[in-house]
Length: 411
Image: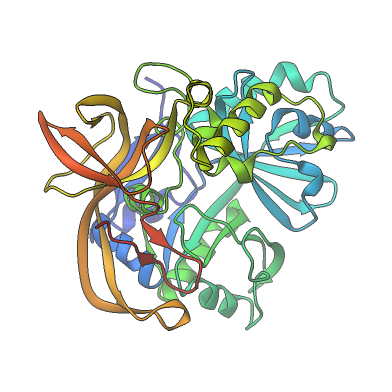
């Protein structure tokens, strides 16, 4: 059995009492002593730190870097300005996902591509025969760098303290900056995987990891593990490779346009040319547009038979990955992610929203189900042999008015 890899912050996790698990070949914290519920709520109310150094960090350099990325990614790389980032997918020829990723341009002459930890070696193997046709290189810098996600309503304020009072990036999502924080050069991205309206990801040299971690803890942040990262992203309908993309429970490839995020991640701009999977994705995109227009004709449903949707239990119980979903007795798909998730009760609306001290819990998740199930449609989930009532809401949270996430409770 091969030895698990460890991030530069491993000893800090152990000292904090973290429960460590094998995740994609890395020994990572699943939770700290306060537990996943407390970590989830602290992220939503204040600020949590996530060690995301296990994520694959690939540096793309060379004259043909744009042409290569245009061919192997779903996004339009030419639309990416300096100090901007974009969510993207690495498509297969059949229109399914090899992986999903984030592309960053901190510097004019190179790109940073961040991929899923468990897929890093697979992605590099996938790129290897393709990159030979381009005058560019891919360098895996995962072991040379550290990445820390700083997420929550107070995250910007804390980072601003380290920046001597300066704003660390422009307010909009996907903005980047490279700054001096107390004598340490840090690349800062206005991105994250918690669905927080305010959140950042830091890219640092290995020797700066403990400084950043400890200083942010001193300022009031708390560590959070993979368990809270999962419940937070689930609440925000952010897909996880292996659950909401890849292959389904029957081993069939899941089309990229089964995801609502595909409309942001996939570009058919003329400048991209004939990129990997373009023909299949164009057919999927047309089907997704037709479904949004409530066209559920056999031709449309054949092109995109299932979609990834939010799901919430009405009956008492908890959903888990792989549980079957039914409509009027017919099996129409599966739960891809599900658990009991905590939330703060709120009052007020928009910019006047306020978190109340009272909390609740709800059984919610994500499902891969028949494309013609309407918003707020009723379904059933097979939970340990019992068919429990559930609904398909439009979303689990709203996060468009910072600083707080507001839960949307299913009726």
